[in-house]
Image 1 (cartoon, rainbow over the protein chains, first blue to last red):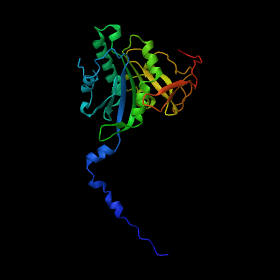
Image 2 (image 1 turned 90 degrees about the vertical axis):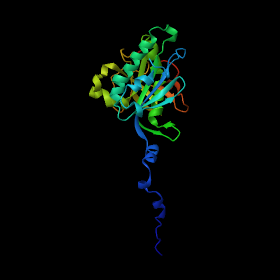
Image 3 (image 1 turned 30 degrees about the horizontal axis):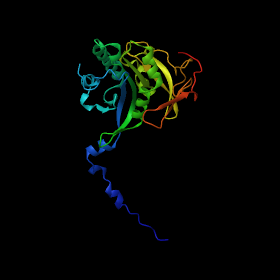
Length: 52
Length: 205
């Protein structure tokens, strides 16, 4: 049986060194602490954008 | 309100904020220690709320419920957020135990249900002076898994609520006691009952 030559040309399509750092930042998850909040009494209002 | 407190926090330019109607998701970058968020950020929000509420009648007092978790979050090109911490923080914020705590403490302007992941990064080390006595363990079920969460009410002793186990805390990583069951098939989460029932079995309140 004749040996099959591997085609590595596809691998050359993905060269991380050619990716911009912005692409990495967009694609990779980052560590965050998530604070999810909501207003208990909706009649209170004035939540967002108000500077005290 | 939150914007001004974030502005005074570490790395304010690196925070991400997402509007959620009557609330928001505020994402603190990795460089901001969770201990600072629990010991400094939330009490500062509480203080602002107290000032804001000074001349408000009861119906117009602003009170906030928080859910807190940490971990990997992906922010896509359109600013959409995804990842377990987003889901867990949202579930904790809307969890019945959090709601009950707010109802039980009429004088509290802020309650928080903190994930065990965040708690374990802070409290065992007494980081920023935080102590176990300031938190109350609640067993919740999120994404089909029982887990500990911790009720935290800056300026108050966390009340006993449903979901608080009667026995001592189990070994870390396991969770006994009574649980809420939260179905995970929608954005809000639906309580379908404690221990898969719709009625109260007794226990601490």
